[in-house]
Every structure is written in C-alpha cells, then in structure tokens.
Image (cartoon, rainbow, N blue to C red; front, side, top):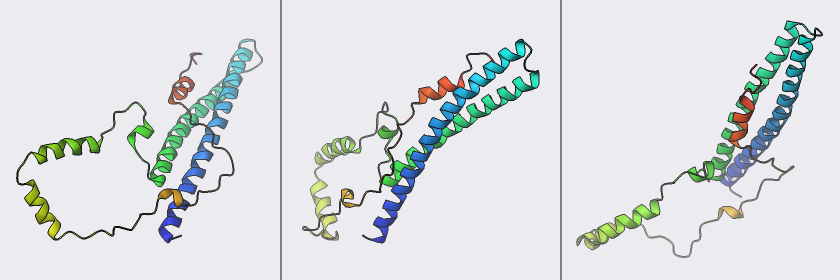
Length: 177
C-alpha cells in the first residue's frame, strides 16, 4: 500500500471515528435535554408550592437552556463531521448532503455541447491538430479501484444520522419559559 493510500485510509478512519463520537454525543445530549426539561418544570412546580426558591428555578432554567445550546452545537458539529467523512471518501456531492436538490449533471451538458459541436464542419480538423501533440495512454493499464483499499476497522455500529427536524423540535419552547 502506498503512502497516499495509507493517508486516505487514515483520513477516512479518523473521519468515521469523529462522526461516530459526535452521534453518540448527540444521543447523550438528547437524553440530557429531556432530563433537564423535567427538572426545570419540576422546579417551577415546587417553587409554586413553596419548596424551592427563585434561584433554584433560575439555575434549573439556565442548565436547561445551556443544554439546548449544546445540542444545537452538536447538530452543527455532526453535520460538519458528515461532510468531512464524505470528503475523505471522495464522495462529497450535493445530492448526498441534501436529497431534494437538483444537482448539476456535467454529462448531460457535455452531450448537448457535443451535439452542437458536431454540427460545425471544422471540428474534425481541430481534433486532428489536437491529437498531434497529445500523450498516448497505455491501453493495458487499469487504474486501481477505491474498493481495493482496506476498510478501516469498525469497533461499533454507527448511530443513525439525526434528522434536522429534531433540532427544531428541541429548540422550540412549548412551555413558554
């Protein structure tokens, strides 16, 4: 395995590990947010009946709001780690990041341009002139496929990607706090 292949494998393995860690952190923050929300609402109820003072309620609310902020940052970091993994794999394409996007297809544009160029009479002369100084490609040489590279070892199963609708759900405050 060449040095470049080792670097690519190491970059993919590092990006995979970072993404798995971010997704685990995201799952932990979701659970923490639910617990903080229950604690905050419980503190408000206890404050109404006289078991807690205002400082306790404000501390609970501050912890709840800071967990919301940390969750939003974790969503951001997870998305960036997802992009970094795709970039390390060489698959950074718009349709993999956003399935609803209409990507630019260079093949279709090339076909349209080729049909336009074939109609011009001097194209064959230009091709002959271009081929005079062009290097010859080895016919028997087959480029190495990316599938031949060794896959990084997986120690655990990757948690699923969080939907962005979850972020809006977590950041809205239905209680009006």
